[in-house]
Length: 45
Picture (cartoon, one colour):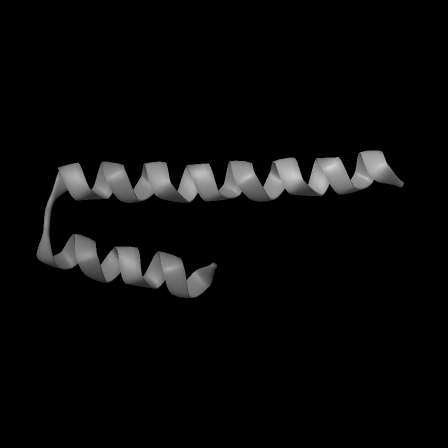
């Protein structure tokens, strides 16, 4: 997760706001996926 954020930060240094927004969207989607998986596991218990 941290490596992913570091990579995004490096990309932001070379590019601009549009890619920043895309990167944030990707991170948010990843977090949503993780949280939904966690809640599914908790429901199974």
